[in-house]
Length: 76
Image (cartoon, rainbow, N blue to C red; front, side, top):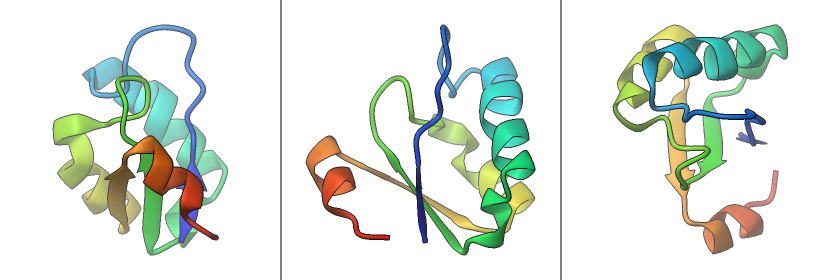
């Protein structure tokens, strides 16, 4: 399992172009696909929304989105 935080300057990951360019590309380059489970904070800047299924297909891993307090308590 890995915790991730995408750093984007504007837009949201649940918009198609940001999902591809600001989520998938950096996570592939950084080897996130090697993990079975990806945990991200559920908020407007981090959620991938309806792309969760596509994320799972491309990365071959499960994407979990947790509220801030739960995300902060996840040990990796």
